[in-house]
Length: 631
Image 1 (cartoon, rainbow, N blue to C red):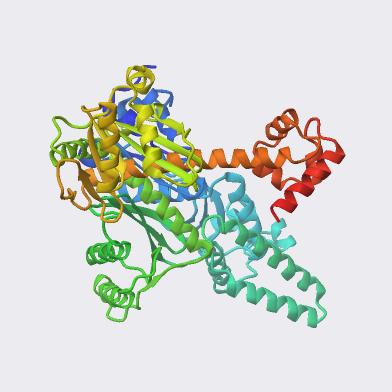
Image 2: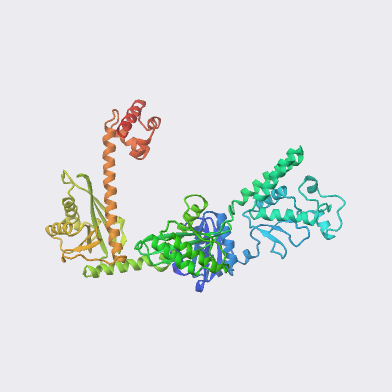
């Protein structure tokens, strides 16, 4: 099968789609939604459309119209199903014809147009006068729900021959012999006309409440009837009520998969980067997650999170057409009361009801709402990622950052290769240096290098240690070594004017004159150069400031990681060597067996004995040494 011709950006964007449950939307021109689908593995399912492996004939035709796509992450496939149905009803995508006529999923239906409504499991097209519940995720579950419900509330089944027979006479002539269900207590006796339409209507009302998730009143009524029957010594009726209660609990468990409450609220999740953020509004109505909206904001870490959240709430709900009684947010806002007053007023205006209740801003700590908050945050992260991939945001920002650095530092060209160095030590022990490289503004890990400080330092001397590292990096041999790459366009160090002058002196001594040098002071995040006595202040939130801070922090992280590794290795060797019977061979065997010194320390005496070559006595001595040392 030929691969459909697509917007070339789609293949690249698909790489960033998560392998999680969710809903996907294929879009055509003018952002028009062509198709909505669901999957338990979004990326895998969406790739089948792109590679032509779906198999359905209309897919190739649709994909020639696809310009872009969107997706929403969900917690489960069931949740994805419910959101898919809602979006299809809301958007009416042209390629969802097969789904719109309800042939894909089973429903439970009540024939409300009949004098005695019956219940049935069906995949039929929706008919006037029939009320449908669902869809359900599997046919067997829907059928079991019908059977269990009829044990709780006696209702006629639409497929019952006796019911059909009495229905043909418009419920005026009883059948000669009642149906078997009536004899078992499942049927209410319509076929024998032993129940009035009014009493039967009460059964139907109870069934509707139960299918909608409102079971408390019915549960209390059944409990009362069971206790009353037991008091009257009518044990047969009491047993029947007990069985109905058990059936009710079974139905409630099934419904919890779809909805565990009837509450309606909005859940706000945020994701931020240095100068950009995304907000995601998860819409929950009557206990069901319906859909979500995402928004890209032009501020990120460069503004206070409370200000960002408050500004978004004010802007979003000033135009919202529906405002629930609760809005879930991940932080407590200082202007909470003012926002609640504003939201309550907007709710009255939006609903055209002057008596609409107040709106509360809530921050959940646990439970369903907390889980939904985490889900909204995940979707905000993916919305931000989609925007960045779609707009080439990172590439454009990196280009801007390099051009800004070229201008600010008066370089001859943009610094396409930037190197940064850092020192990590503990009172002069296990001292190391790091070299990180950013090529074209991006991390270039293949070019990273680590240096173990060779000089004898009794105490921390960062300047002298930095001098040793730079001497080794820019020695004539290293400058010719292809493994170290070409000389950088910019050398960035952590520190202000004193540190910068010390590094400049080392480079002068080495005869290195063709490397631009700058220092980034932590306190004010200012750039210092050798040719100016005044610092260069990069605009707060600018791409260039974000880049140099990231490079400086990456050099610090890389040095610290290496320092910790050497320190832990030395500690491991020192302690293990002190245990009688453990030499180099057994030490290697222990580390290979457990994977790390931390796991050796956490192991029990019995677990230590399982290591190759470790006897019971050695394990006992090792266990004692470890727990004396670390107690």
